[in-house]
Amino acid sequence: MEWYHILIIIYAVAMNIAAAVVTVKDKELAKKKRWRVSEKNLLILAALSGCVTMYITMRAIHHKTKHKTFMIGIPAIFICEVLAAIGIYAFFTMQSA
Image (tube, rainbow, N blue to C red; front, side, top):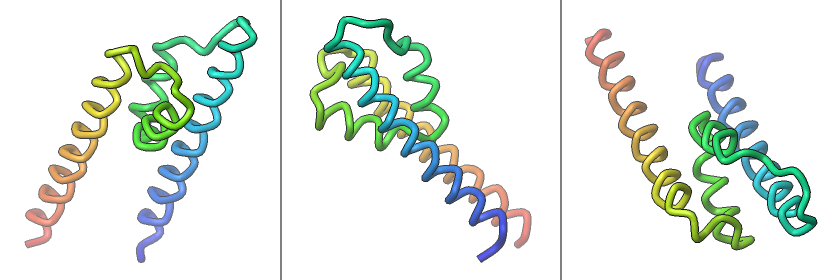
């Protein structure tokens, strides 16, 4: 395995852990009626490769499940990321062929 593959895996794991932690923290802050993490920041975190864990966490703790922005937006981000990954993979495999 190349060194950059390891970096990509470390990045993805770190972003997914961060997404889960921030989602749980936002739920705790909501219960205490305190200052919250903005929806924009949650969506940015999802777009930085944390969408899978964020979506699973939101469903598990019943946080923002009534917000269409999250219940449609996060799966849409995931689909875009998968399509981008397939496109990047196809581009680089065609370059080396």
